[in-house]
Image (cartoon, rainbow, N blue to C red; front, side, top):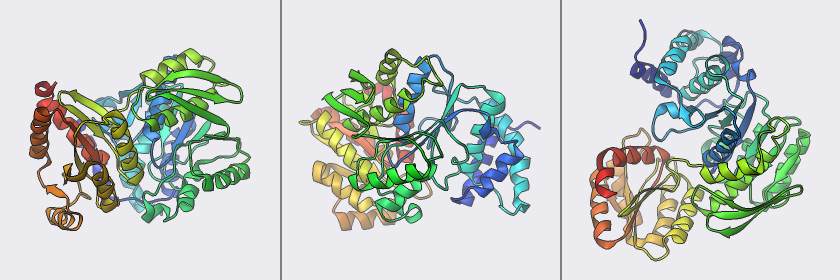
Length: 435
């Protein structure tokens, strides 16, 4: 009997009970059962603490505007589960999800008795991505976003055309390590022999390490600030320059100074591709960088009042959020509704928000396994002197009404899982009344 779409997705999500299992042996065994679909296409591999999704979006849009069919694998999703596997920005169909699950179920469940055990949810979805583009939807190139780290991430099972590392920050320290160097080492695990590496990493102390890791693999290494540079000329424009090219006055479609840096990394990567993809030109680069969009990344959902959602899920993300808010809304009063998962440095993140938004920061929770409980919220309230609210929906509606009266800004930030819930709520329930 054919599965319904909801049943197929429920089966995928049931793998979440297996948690995170770093390592490649189980993933390679699963791909072997499928005939190694990861070997059937050309790929760009993207790792980094922050900026992966935006950099993927910039590259995807330019490649698409150059006439190519571009597959992308990203996580987590913001609008629908299907968007994790997309072609030219269009999510995989429900019918294709069902077909993949029906093929995968006997293979995946049969692995229970293998030496490697059953694959996790992320491993299954990653393998589905490879299988979809190998057997169901031909593409010219695919862009693969690392899930966690790099070296032991289940996406690290192919040799790409390019390896891209966006940024390094202190995140997932329980798995990746408790220093920048340890985390960088995990991200650098995607570097492959003779494959060019494009790096947006800014910390000077990490540059010799990346140069060494690239040299060990005889991989050409292109570092931001040394091998390619950007010069900001406005909040949304910059000049790009490397040894061979200068592109003046590039317009960027995403908001924030950090997006100029992400765009520069994407441009350097794209300029290395024409040997394989000759349709890429300065014109398509300009058009694609300007046209790029990425839901939930400093996204404005309303003008009256101004309503911003931004997935800032770690200390570096919060710092970027604060800087962007200060640039975009230097004089307007702002209210911030924030929620993060319990494995994040919540105390530090709230403290940074309070330095900018004072008593207008509100901590809340949402329906997710690793979200704060009501009791944990109360502890945070007393410890950090921050307002807490258990029901984010009613709190958000109240903030919107206050902001209308005060001509203030309402920003919702924190976990991308939280942002996904809020975005759906706003677009479905109240968008018509606040625009």
